Image (cartoon, rainbow, N blue to C red; front, side, top):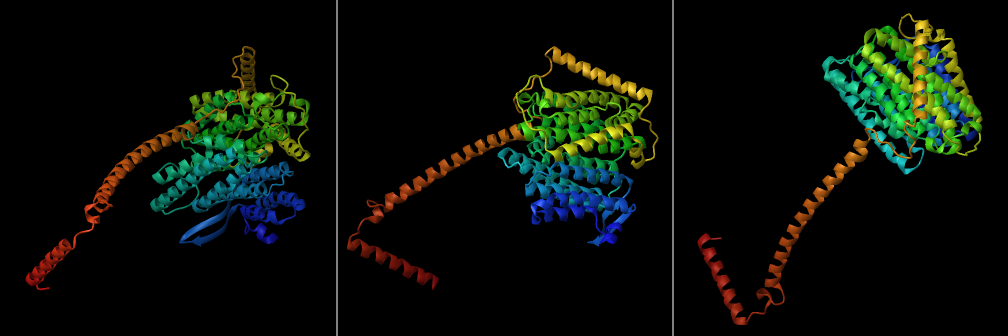
Length: 571
């Protein structure tokens, strides 16, 4: 068994998928230990197997590679395994078997896609991810979650269909299914690019994230926040590095969520907009495509999973104890949940890229390369960085735990397992920010960078001070958008308002046409019935009793007619 693990015969994805389906058959007391052991076993494989391609086999004349390990996939594999361990630890108190199974199968499928060496294997795990992840949304077991899950499933199955179409066209054109650098060189690669874009939440393709994720449970939303978008980032980094369109797409992604996050009342939805914004930094860096920019994208994805996960954990703790994450209903929770408050502040400072926190290290890489190669994109990223501080660095901890007023809610602190998971994330966010050298060592590309230079630190501090000052001025002048109990629609207005209205209108027109047709048919049928009744009814000519003489006469006429026919046609 150990030999099979070390030589790559058992890929990590299989461990999680098979392990997930074994969970229901285990006693409840053993499930937690078993689930915590799986990411440790997967990490053992990851660090024991040398870089290379494993589990290659032929299928329908195609060579498939189920396990490809190289520096790019390895760093994503490390953080994926770490996030699974922390997610399981955070959810140890959950007894729901649906969440337990889906919480392993979905990350396992993401790891399968991560280590896929070909596009067919990637597609298979792509679809397993879509199907398994929707159960994490439906785990809330309410009508809103059910509807959001259906919309989510439709979008992600569509992404898989587009990916498959792109793979087929690309294979027909090149004869290759290798999952390596593709570039936007054909219609097939364009379809693959769009499929990645849906999972990555590109602008106008993004709102499945804000629509579905906030409907998850306390723990399932944390799991959902990690894998789908980051696998798409990995796919872009591998297949489309240096694609200039990604700079514009990424810059747009960083900017527009800021405006929606500012007016949003649901703090978990604010974090979903924040997630969209953060992925934009990675996408823009991939578009720049220099070794340092790609290191920045990969490293930022790594640390973002930790500190963004920490913020989702903190809001999950608030939801668990206070029963809501609506900013208008919170305030004063720091008195009851001091540890969660501190951990949330650490996550907020990390995502805001304060010096000595992990976000500062890799966002600096991205901003430096943007300044060198795309000045206007750098300006947009600077604006977005200030926006991050406002909506995630300040709004999340302020309205989540302090608020404009004390809500009067007095609750218990988060469970111990949740606090431990948050503590680990907080420790890593600070440790990486203070000692980034070990992170530099595992980055996939050769590039020199020093985070703590006078220019970097002063520029970032100036930006942060300006953003804090702007927030204070807006609050003091009552210009900051109030927290309103309302649902803010984004591009989901198209399929939640416009599309139903169009369908309703079309239905009304079809119903009117159908009614008119039925009226015509009814009138014609009524005329036929009336005519038949007039002749065959009780008073109709054909219903009256005929005299015997008339009957004999008609019989004679008919016989004569028959004789004439037989004579002339000799039948």
